[in-house]
Length: 293
Image (cartoon, rainbow, N blue to C red):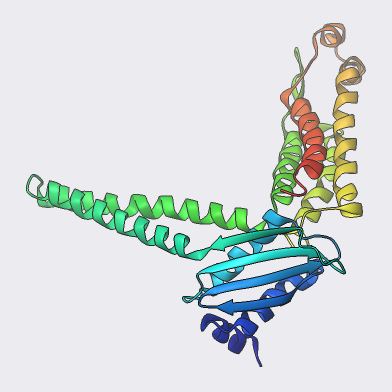
């Protein structure tokens, strides 16, 4: 049976087809549905893995997957999770699809009523041009806001919180390369791109690559996490070392400058160095703190 046929059966409420699709998505995570039942719109799933599946991550994963399939008859999903080979259920969670559908419909009706009321209240007091402008604005504003909300939601749903945080922080670390690393009289501001910043830029690249590869809903653990955090930690150390070595940096820049002495005594660290250090430390912290969130 082809995947489109399985999806069509799942939309019709076929429990076996639903479980087949879920198991296909969970296979890379080493997790599978080992027991299931569907009765009057209530689906029960027993999840099993070598390690106990993370509750919040699995709940969001199943909710998002079943929402995309759009099964009209589905009312609730009860998730039960346990470790492979163990009889005891570690956690259970119920996902209520009826409230989500009801809320979405209520919000849609509210927006329609709000627009209609606004239109009728202004109709008798506006010229034809003002009415057209009002209609145009009332249409465009929700569209623009909805687009932003849509893409933001898609971004949050496409990444595990840990990976999304690592990606954002690593990009900030790369940005620090092009910001001032030091300020000095006569010389002015000097960015990291004019010195060792290219090294720290490369040290943040592994974190970006690792956060984008593989299953983005699965956090970085083990060697992959070390591959992202160790270079970032080295970048932070480089920034700290630069701050402690500012005098020698100024001396290197101003050896042939008659104002070299003034430069050496007045040199200050720029925002780029502080952002570099903060990004390197923050990346290492979130890689562990957000692993199971």
